[in-house]
Image (cartoon, rainbow over all chains, first blue to last red; front, side):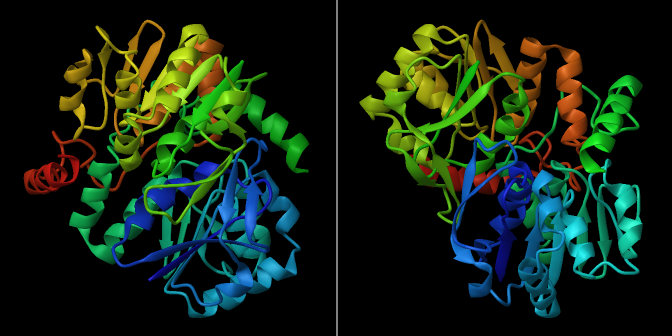
Length: 211
Length: 211
């Protein structure tokens, strides 16, 4: 299986690396980081670059498409080179997946119409514009579409899809080897759980950023 | 604050990117990915390269040192360029940290003598050779040393240290923005929790790999 992970300027690194480290451990698979042009691609803060080894055009028929999110997603929403590639790759993919605001790119490409989906909690309300229906789940399976919520949820998505493809034992092995026994020092990982004033602060800031 | 994240051939990507995405969100900090030589550094499977923007020699006095682990750690255990840099950087650092088998590099540099520490569960028994005492904790604070267990535990370490430096509210904000509300689809993230036959399988394979 060929797994293509899409990079673009100002993506969020953990969105890509979380599922890479889980799903990417699928035996007999090839993972390829792809971008419009090959070479280093800088993340949202600019302090990290991941290398895209191939151009989108060089990887036209991946078995699994994985689209991370990040602040740079908004600049890609009308990038027809990327959106066309997503449509073409999706036409033959076995699984089409995203993390965080990566789902908005799938949605903009027209791939989530009539589908259940999710996104970063601050971006959920944008999905209906594209005919997708936001759910409260952390990982949403709808047919061949596997859509994860914000940033770190890609780790859970990667494990869930790995189990679906390769079986429970494989996914459990990868969970054990990555020692994924999470013990967050706080319980603030969702707007339902974080202190209300922190949620309100970021909702206010995101209105400023996103609109 | 300057945060230096060390890369070397065949590191594990999530070891570096997990704490990068949490601790690296510290306001007014500068994160620098460093390696013996600047440029792309390939991870353990070879399918991903992260770019080291500076050479070790160019970043002699970081405030925080972060050493990821990975299969490539064993080739670095006698690399005096790296070990000397770790000793020098540690002499003036505020915090010296590691994820996974990165702790064995700190130990080989002589920095964990008499300290409580941890590592990937398959490497814990190597710590006493260097005078460090393995504990069963996922994240171990001992003075200025903050040592995390395998791979994904660096996310928890990054949040815990972020809270220690910048306060609970900051760490909770970062947990919320990375939507770190883990929901692993299996409960197999430690040798105590994974199916016994899977643990035994990997213990057997690691004896072959590590010795």
